Amino acid sequence: MTRPVILDCDTGTDDAIAIMLAALHPDLELLGVSTVHGNHPVSATTDNTLRVLDHIGRSDVPVYAGADAPYSPRLAAPDSRILDPHLPLPEPKSKKQEQPAAAWLAEILSASPVTFVATGPLTNLAAAIDLEPGLVDTVEEVVFLGGTQRIANVTALAERNVWNDPAAAQKVFTAGFKRLVVVPLDATYRAPISAEEANRLLALGTPAGRAAARLVHERIEQYADTEARQAPVHDPLTVAYVIDNGVLSLQEVHVDVITAAGGAYGRTDVRRGDPNVFLALDADRIQYVDLLMSTFS
Image (cartoon, helix red, strand yellow):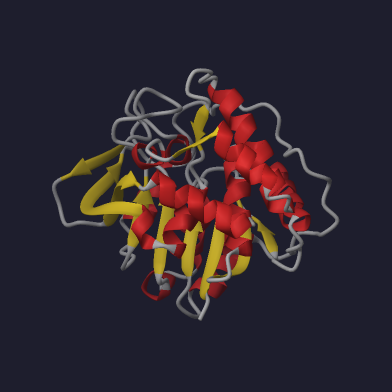
C-alpha cells in the first residue's frame, strides 16, 4: 500500500528535488503540494512547483498556493540574499488550484490520516489549525525541515525556515501532533551530495535525474566549497525519511522556538519539559543518495 503524503514547500532548488522524490517514489501517493512564502514570494514558489511537476510528467498532482506573509508579523527584517526566484526549467503549462492552501489543508488533513511534509515555513499549517483544530488528532505524522542546534544559515543562531515564521513554528510545535519529526541543519549537513554523485544522477538520463543533477551542481557553486565539491541538499531528506525511517537517527526531546525580538529570534531551543518532537541528530548519507539514485532512475 502507498502512503498518502502532502508536501508544503517554498520551492527553490532543494524543494524541487523533494517534490520529484515524493512524486516519483512508488511507495508514496502525493495528494498535492501547497506552496508558501520563504525562499521566494509565493507566486514564484507556486510557479516553480508547477514547473517541477510538469517536467517529470506529474502535472496531475494538484498545487495550492498558500501564504505570502508570516502567520504573525515578523520582528526582524526579511532576508533578501536569495535573488533569482525561478528554477531553470520550462515555464509551466499546468495551473494552480483555485482553493487557498490553508483551506485545502484544513479539509484534507482532518478527513483521514495523512503524512504532512513541510520544507518551508510552517505558515500554511498554522493557518489550517486555526480553521480546523481537530486536524491535529487526525494527521498521521508531520515531518518538518527546519531549526538547528549548532549549524545556522540565516543568523548566528537561526535556520531560515523557522526564522521566516517563528510564530507559526511555535504554534505547530505546541499543537499536540501525535508525531512531529524535526529535521534540522545538524542532520542535513551530515548528508551532503557531491559533484561526482550529481554526475551519476545526470547519467541516469531521466528528466528527474537531469534536473536533480543541475540543481545539485548549482547548490555546490552557491556553497562555494571548491575543495570538497559537495553541498547539503536539505529538503529531500524529509521525504527520504518518510520512505525509509532508517535514513535518520531520532531523539525525543522538547523544543521551543524563540519568538521574542533580539539576537535569538527564530532559534530552536531544546529545553526541559515533556517531549514534543522527534529531533533528527544524524543522517545516513549513503542511504540517502542511494534512494535518490534508485527513484530517479
